[in-house]
Image 1 (spheres, rainbow, N blue to C red):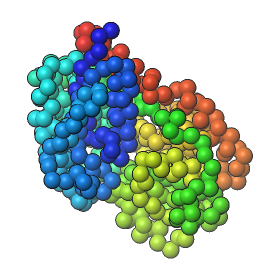
Image 2 (cartoon, rainbow, N blue to C red; image 1 turned 90 degrees about the vertical axis):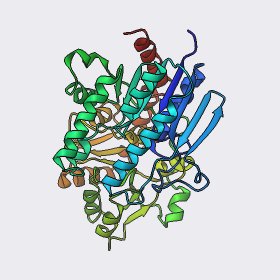
Image 3 (tube, rainbow, N blue to C red; image 1 turned 180 degrees about the vertical axis):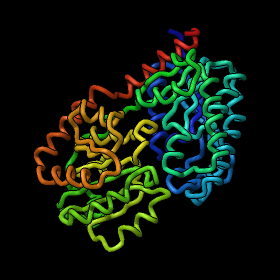
Image 4 (tube, one colour; image 1 turned 90 degrees about the horizontal axis):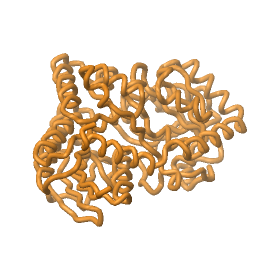
Length: 410
């Protein structure tokens, strides 16, 4: 097989710290290791504080050559207030437009991979396809606007209608759409013409099981935060309105013997800290550098994946793979019959309960805290399962096979 030339359009790429950036960065490097040439168009690093990171300011466009191709970084037009949805939408649109303009140079490619969110990257990828001729593979990490509508983040009916129109348009312009789970595939298939259903494919995200391994629970992070050897119930990830973190804080009142650590930042953090005021066993810490992710995961004895009702089919918390890789048990509060409960059942790596059910959630957490050996066994089962189910090499091979198929017109 001859090497492929692939254009990759994504909102985040290393050294940016977004989880989706970690995903696409590893996929690019795995495809490069298979001999392919890749040209990435992405944003300047900005995810951690929602502003361009120090050292990257001053230019709207920065280009660099790599051993496997190139990286072009453009301004994301960041807004300081994460809760200002109009400002964020304008920033996404501006980024997508500028990324589209810069992606048109470089000649013909064999494929274009565009990652969403933001949803506008679908049209950016389509424009790149029209100029550079490679078929468009549209990668969906979260189905938008479904999650925003379910959480009430978007209520304006005109905005919702425009977003749904853009969603359908993007799906129909792609030669292939990739999603992370069967649930998301059902969601997308319901929105496209029956003749296009075969273009929607499931390729899950992966976890780097070499980088994330089971480790000693008494980490330096515990010492930094003043946490002792008591059990730590950990939520690590985006602190937004899609997660049922209010329920987590309220549940902490019932378990004073454990420390509840919320590690991350997001639009809901300020209100959540106010809710936790007066609870000495609830701690908050910001995002940690990527190299400390295994340490963060090791800090928790029990990890939480709480997602509000109705979101289990439109979002797959990829952090679940990382928790399993760290050998820690998962307590997920999420819609039954969706991907995360299926992962937990298949792996034996934890417990899944219905979303937003504080009593059932508290009961399940109490059982895990009361039986540390059983919780540890779940963690070991989860580690063994993820080692065989979600390797980076397997995911890259799936993308390679899909590109070859769509390039051949299949």
